[in-house]
Image 1 (cartoon, one colour):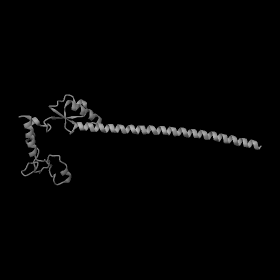
Image 2 (image 1 turned 90 degrees about the horizontal axis):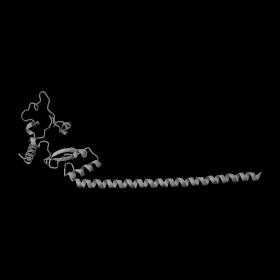
Image 3 (image 1 turned 180 degrees about the horizontal axis):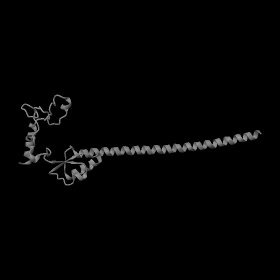
Image 4 (image 1 turned 90 degrees about the vertical axis):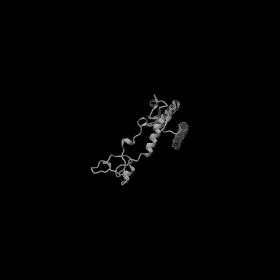
Length: 192
């Protein structure tokens, strides 16, 4: 059977597959919110003993065809990528990637490389617009940082100028004080 036909078959099987809820999941809010299946363990459990009329349990009959098991719905094998080295050896006809566990800078590099290699990225709808938006944001951030740095430098220069002018005033006042003291001494000496 071809891969496309098997994928269609898997989709049809998944549509019929029931939700596997844990035992007594409907009776407790805490258990109802927990969607994970748990094997029933009770000694007298009707669900464990597979009585008729009880909810369905996972079994091999519900599984996907072996050739398409674990594939993405597009038919490509999904590969988690967290750095540039994860892209090595991937083929666009067989693999698609999921970006995970990286910051924005590294993500930009990986997306660029993936676009060069013509790989499909499953968790980005439009990689080109993502790149453009992030680059614009980074440029804006850089510009703001430059403005902030210039403002800081300007305020430092102003502070230095203020300090120098204050020092000059203090020197002038020191000279004035000295002259006033000299004048007082002269006055005292002239009185005698």
